[in-house]
Image (cartoon, rainbow, N blue to C red; front, side):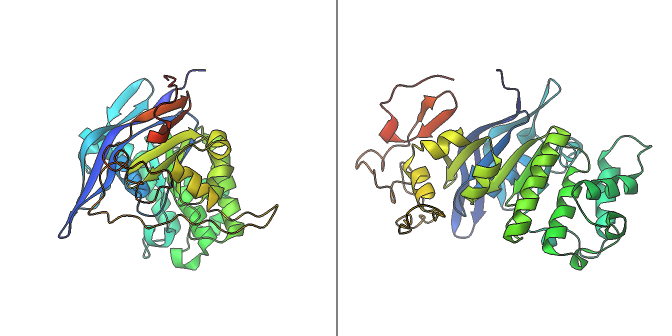
Length: 336
């Protein structure tokens, strides 16, 4: 079955400059997001997951810049290169929020503390919905009800600090989905809530995905979230993709040593009790990333003179499974 691409990231390089030097937060990232797909981006803190999301929405901090590469959004047979747009341009503002929306890590810092939840959702609806007959407040209440918010008609007039963490997260989801975006980016959507609420939030996101026919990018460090919610997974390390596969292939047959180490470091909840296997070593200084494969300083399969000198190229394990590792470079490659 042919896959319709809704977002294409090609050789993206996003850098941050400071007094200490330059951080290559995203360093040659290439990814595709397909229609009605849930794509997971997983990796340790500092691997470039959130910067990828900021690059897609063109909301980088002042010291951040997309140095090269392309991000292209496809909709109704038309394409728009996001990387060619200025952050505050009319074209970018029409995409951000309306076509591509985002749920941020901590809703308490994402909402304005001096405006009610309702005012902030209504503002989004009025800004992006073209139909002048829409009752923005009614639409806001409807979205809150869809997220399972209790007493939505009363909660709409509450301030963020009046709500619990789970309720704030629901309000953030309602605001992100209020304009029925084609793509939803969820950046660590369950970080600020407890385990019980986490399951509710993930279930809600998947229900809304089916309701609105969205494509979803879930950014997380939690492999449990990835296993429960995604169709396909990209594993990142120091700004680069190490492996991309369907969620089943990734867990059943991980190929990259980093992916294997991530999976092995997760505590087992059933079967024989085994010792926790941590990933050895530490993440290199982002201002001084070593040459070659960025993971070679911690890799159990390190090949001296190869992994520390050259950057691995993509090896196609199957049509839906790619890995960037010299360990698999000699395997038969299957083109997409």
